Amino acid sequence: MTAIKESSDELNPAVAVSATEIPAPKRRNAADYLALAMATCGVGYFPIAPGTLGSLVGVAIYLPLEHATRQLLANIPAFVLPLDTPVLAIKSLVILGLTLIGIWAASRVEARLRIKDPAIVVIDEVAGQMIALLSVPAFFPGWLPVLSAFLLFRAFDIWKPYPIRRLEALESGLGIMADDVVAGAYAFIVNCLLISLYVLLMK
Image (tube, rainbow, N blue to C red):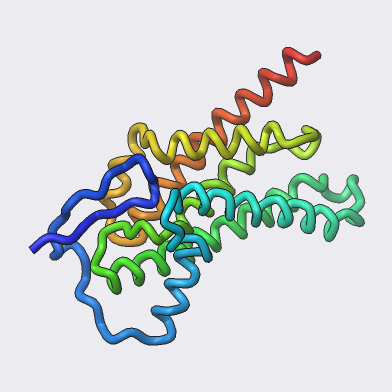
C-alpha cells in the first residue's frame, strides 16, 4: 500500500511513498483541528500556489512584528542595550516558537490525512520566510530588501539545493519544517550579501 507525498512547493510533483511511513490515524479531537488550523495558516487549502501564499503570510507576520517590537522597546536607552539586539532576540524567539509549533502541527496533520508532507501544510513556508526576512536591515528603506528576501526564499524552497531535499526524509513534521528552515537560512545569507553589495556600490 502506498500514500502520496505532496508538497506545497508548486513546482515539486507529488510522489508515492509507503503508507507504513505515516502513522495510522486515530479518532479526531480538538487538538487535531487546532493543528490543522495552525498548519494551514488560513491559506493552505487555496488551490493555487499555497506555498507562495504561506510565504506571504510570513511577510505579513514579520513586518508588523518588527514594527511593534521596535515601538515597544524604543524607550530602552541605547547605552544600556542597542535596540537591534533585543529586537533580533524577540523575532528569533517568535520564529523558534513557530517552528516548534509547526513540527507538532505538521506531524499531526500528516498522521490524520495519511499523506506525506501534505500540500495544505504551509506553516513551514511561514517560518522559513521569516528566517529569510531577518536579513532585512532596519536602516534600509523601502521594499527592495523585503522583495529580494521573498524571492530568494521561494527560489531556494522550490530548487532545494543540498542538503534541503535530503532533510525532507526526516520523520514527519520535522522533515516538513527542516527543509524550509534551511531554505530560509540560505535566503538569509544570500540576501545579506546582496544588501551589503548594494550598500557598497551606492557609497
